[in-house]
Image (cartoon, rainbow, N blue to C red; front, side):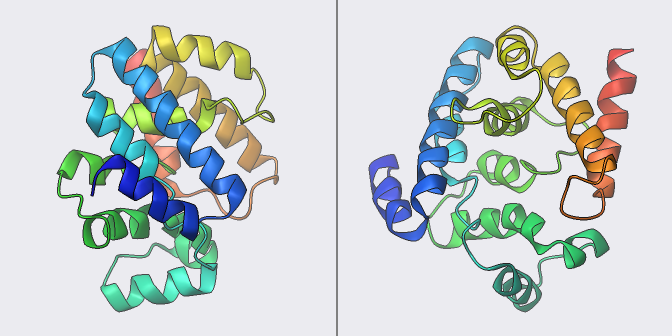
Length: 191
């Protein structure tokens, strides 16, 4: 499927707000790809499909992942919303015909991150956080500017803000260990 075909299909499958967010992430990812010398098409496809499983009810996400043999962590079991990344990578391949492993990986890690993310992984993770319709995160203007200057610094700042948010009990459950590992990895790399 090309980008336009995927957009048409997602418009039917996602709620209005999620669809707007999805398009915004796609264009933000494209901008970051241009700024940092990444593959533009990969960034657009990964940005467009990053939340393709987001509107599936949480109980159904959990059931589908179990049926498909997708590994589920204890944190994901307690907070199935997190499974939209793993299930989304599966759906991107099986329902949208994406066979590029880098695109699929970027979709899979866009929520929790993972240590040693590649350029596309970072772009999708950051684009999801800074896209123009996001408006609640602290220091968002600074983070947006930083994203176009230094992806690693932007990633570190986003991880720090996210972990503080979750530790203060404002998140929807436990902190995923992968998020903590990602933060530790980038922190050690930058210091």
